[in-house]
Length: 176
Image (cartoon, rainbow, N blue to C red; front, side, top):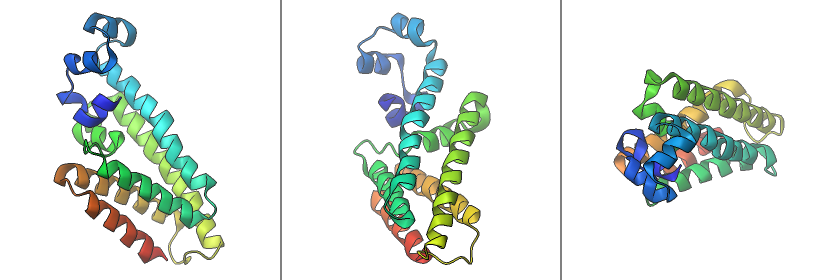
């Protein structure tokens, strides 16, 4: 997963995968299928682990805004990672987009789940008086996910993790 996450699908070779796993190409293919199948499995694993973790941050925080801040902090850490890896789903969407239906479905489903979790968090934040109710929680959720995706992609392309953290702080400041 980390090889694809750092290098992307196109720039990851079987040699890279052999070094990362300690397995030979034939063993990798036997166990996981071709490179495309491996990448699809990696994306599925990433969604089950990382996206679930992010949703957990939103759901388990002491307050809704604390959860939202913790998600942006986690995304800032991804942007600042030494490999510049950003977010595997954002990277896959930018690199592959709709060219691979399986990846496109996985990205859409993960985005839907993240947006739904953010919407719940924003509704709770409004009910708790942490943010105003002038905006629909669903609209704020879509904006939060779009801001997250955009800032992570921007950080990967421009090597500007500090800008990512600033953008997230500005977003939260505008809400509160």
